[in-house]
Length: 161
Image 1: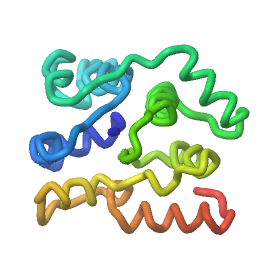
Image 2 (image 1 turned 60 degrees about the vertical axis):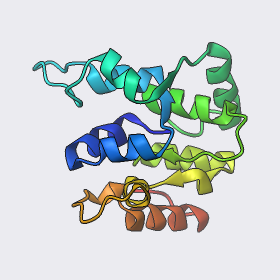
Image 3 (image 1 turned 60 degrees about the horizontal axis):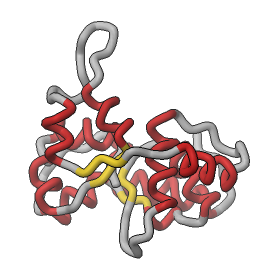
Image 4 (image 1 turned 90 degrees about the vertical axis):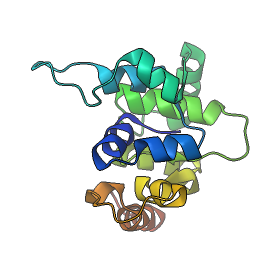
């Protein structure tokens, strides 16, 4: 599963096509729409149409029941934005044994820790390297080092700043 920020970063770094062909990428419909929605100045995070992006990964509609299950599990302990909420709602409803969530959001990490699925978070750097990308220049929040540090902080009971 991949979030909006990771979709954007993979396009910027130039590894999107490599990872989408190597992995079965899935996301919440909201994340697809968010990635291609123009901002106030008309700029998009990803310069594609909704249809083009939908053809490159599998989007899922998220139901109110799935959102409610996440709300009940988190009991208001984490403030998630709409994309994070939908992606995690979808993730905890997955029946498949093997899946990872790729995204650099601290709120998502906090929520995954509370849900007992912190080990399911992976960095975009790791995904890209597994798919064969080498020598990419990553913003810190997309690196394996950043993710490892944040995981350790959470496991030690520290707050993420």
